[in-house]
Image 1: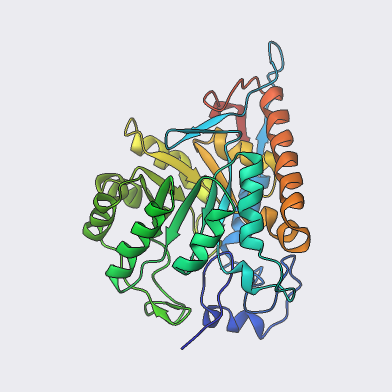
Image 2 (image 1 turned 45 degrees about the vertical axis):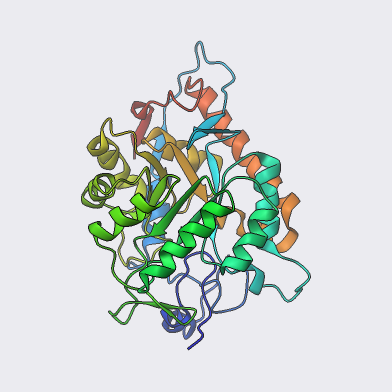
Length: 336
């Protein structure tokens, strides 16, 4: 059974068929079944993401403000910005022009920008080709029912110089209430014991991606994860709480554990990124924000978009007296 995949969420095609039956205008490019339209209804967690983000307002603290520095450290390495390129998948299958490889183009953009590039579900051979075009990367692995496949993909990531590796803890159920199947490959549950084994096996920092509760954040910490991504995987969870809404609780619960906190979820601008960082994230992941630019125009367009987002982030930091990416103050935010 070979199912097409959503490039951003990794959702198998059957996850989208109900949506496809009811045409909805969508801002996302690409063939049907590969990049889904969202329903726009109450169960669509992305609707709540956007509403929550847009109702966070910012006070001004301009006296003594200076031009901020965006340099940020992740996993012991320094990057030009706290903005990371998120773990999308299968983009090389999307375009009619098969001479182009958007996954490699994205890797080159990250290298040129000196930002961290995250890579989703790809074969080992394709993964090697992608990272050869870039610089630093994080490989995110699916929760395969075959655990040996997970261990093998961790090994390949390490062999190719990944700065970290992780697993999509949130991609377990399919919409039929059973374990999902992606690209014909069966997925399975993730226990805390499993997570601890993967983290112990990895020689690089291990990431739990898809944390949306204090409970899972603490389990990931106790399993030995060096980082988490607060996320609902672009709306995999119906009625999912906005990641930014639970982020402060997770930040407080992790306390001084030194777990790095990344966040994603409808972050479309540098202003959105600012709000995520002010609420407690160490870094943000952007996927949908660069998707159209990447597929339509490639590396240069992604670079232009991220430069613009960095400018917006820097603008709000200056307006609120934030000197660098370690000095955000959540008290500057007001919830409308």
